[in-house]
Image (cartoon, rainbow, N blue to C red; front, side, top):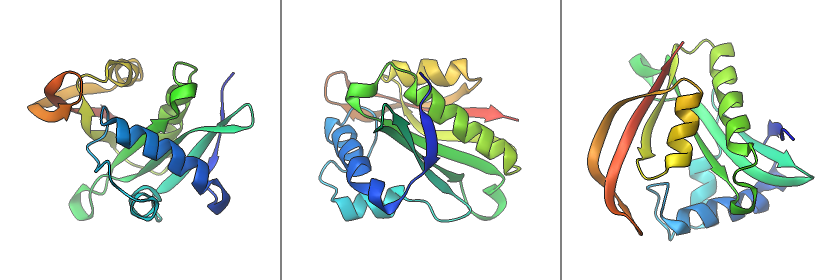
Length: 163
């Protein structure tokens, strides 16, 4: 069942913080400080216009979240970026795919020329495979740039989808 994707509301934050906290503390997929607080996370995750932050709701529960917006300001503002986090209990059920497709559709509708992911952990094969299925290409890898708790130092991919 495809989750409903809708804009984040203030009431959603406790559930979103739970997902962010779980993902960041695992230290497997995001280069964020595992000691970040809820207020630190909120300041980083909740996008201001022209960006957007959404949640994926499945079976009445928030199963994931995404943020999207311009990758850079000024001369780089025509390229979008996005980040996704899915609750451990919801992985493998299409939540990440739905969030990715939503952000790509949003970027197209907003007139961006493409979407760039700046730091996809090489060992996060589920995400790498998903992005490739959605048309993204690996255009570079910074070797040993991410210290994974299981695999040691692994690469960070730069991935891109041009419209």
